[in-house]
Image 1 (cartoon, rainbow, N blue to C red):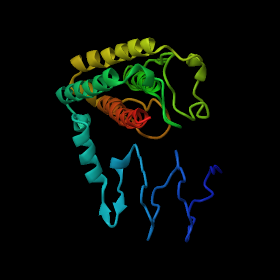
Image 2: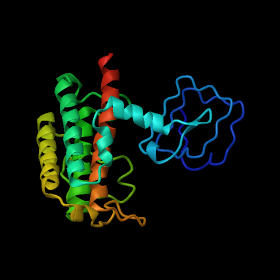
Image 3: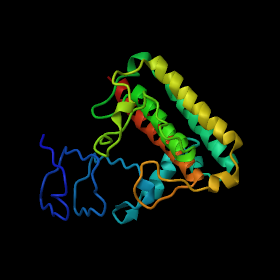
Length: 244
């Protein structure tokens, strides 16, 4: 399969063309217009869908998708909370949902993955990294908050991230669970004592760049967004793997 990168198709028009079976990853398809197209089996996954619009036959389906995801994942809607009490409830709900998935996953599937996606073990390692980034670095201001088993995202090296932080050999699943539990405990302890005033304080974007200065509350909500998004991904993939 041919792989295209860059912006060579920006502003292009495809007339009577076949993109059947094509895969598009980490690409900008904002403002793409499709007319008189066959979309049977079209599969779209966007991590920031709720921030924009998606028109299907003239109907913005984003509110419908978000409502259905909140129904499928009880407690997900709490991730938008703004008060200490609301964020504590949101964290409890997210961790309860994750506990169900971890307990229900057979041992032989914890390292299995569908093509181009992370396994359960890798996903938990990424959540370790997300906690380190948004709690350790953003909120607490730690210079080097990252645990060595964290799972970094593709392209981090090209962004100038110091990859030497991370251990080259993968950890055991037992170690992953232990480190993950410690990071969960840190978030729980932080939320137990956080105040409205603290949530309103501004911080720097831990990934740098841009003019965005998130509040402490924003950082907590990013952690919650990471938790629910990756829970959705791994449940989707485990369902596929379980069919084999």
